View 1 (cartoon, rainbow over the protein chains, first blue to last red):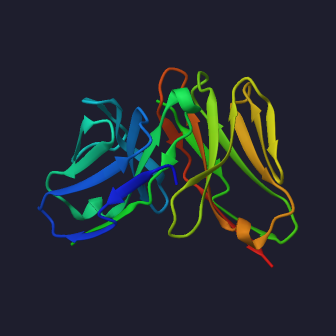
View 2 (view 1 turned 180 degrees about the vertical axis):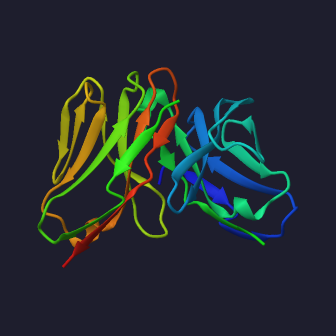
Length: 113
Length: 112
């Protein structure tokens, strides 16, 4: 599955606590993305990265921050988790030089109580 | 930004019938249109894609058509099988960026 892993795979946390999700790839793809998936909303882009230290906001970025200090890792941080951030989070990677298909990680299921 | 509408939201067919899912997009500069299949509890996986310089593409029982003038594209699945049951997502990529905008998904149920 395109050498993408996400950690943790499941997490339960309390409102107000910080949470960091990790996406790790072994494919050396340039682009990395964080999506959230909620019933009735499909996949919505939170943040994306087009290179090391190069990131930008997606359509639902409020309450989230990201960092990419290495090609292989893309971190998503919820600064102060809220119940509305309960969701399934997917990381994806792509590379225009290799056909631009986005490949998804296995997902992280986050529950904020 | 890009907006992608997908219909229907649910689709139920009998095994062996055809299924058609339709999407429209708003950005006339969009040039790449993938379709993803997501089984319950799994990650989305690409099943077929089409670029704006092509009107139709087939892969065995799956085909995608694109009408650039009308800004819509469709997924066609023939001879459906129970294992085709899943949620299907369409997406569009704008002409000047590398982001995908997804439709809200179609739950396809194939009844034996």
